[in-house]
Image (cartoon, rainbow, N blue to C red; front, side):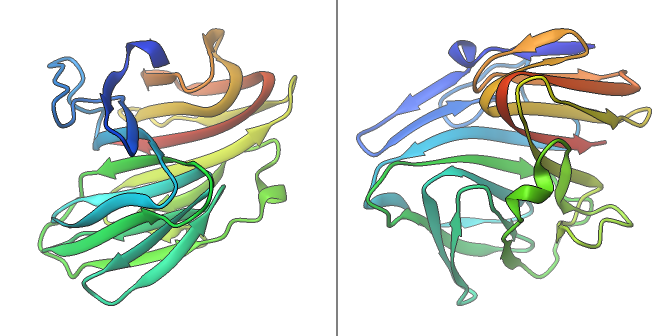
Length: 232
């Protein structure tokens, strides 16, 4: 089963510095049929104006992954961590028993991110934050594991969940395959471009909720940038 979530049908929130689309219920957007997908709870498509951002605020008991699509995001938190994550790279904040953080666009251009929240398998752990640059050439024509709590994904950023966050780029006409184990849920969104997923078509910034599909065949209709979560 592949359920396409078209960009124009996503929840919307807009203020002077933030233009957000919500794939799942979040904030003032509530859809009882879109409360999450497996362990995936939040997928926000955020556009942040230059010189603005999210001021310090708390989180607990959530794995928060930020995939930067354009521009850069600057992080700081109550543990003393500071970092700047640029387009195509990823940061992970495991909120654990509690952390305060801020995320700012310190750039002179618009920053676009996917903010992804995954429910942890265990509660009460010590919070941590990390970011990583992923060589862009390594993601051409295939899906690469960016963050993971699964055994064997040693090169990925760690999270406290039996889940994977994957990213990849496909040139028009290229295909990539992914095996989805029984009982697991996949959620795929396009940062850019258009693809087919097992013959279902997604356009720019569309999403797809996927279950009971043993194998995914993703083919680019036009040059595409893909992010996907695989979780229980």
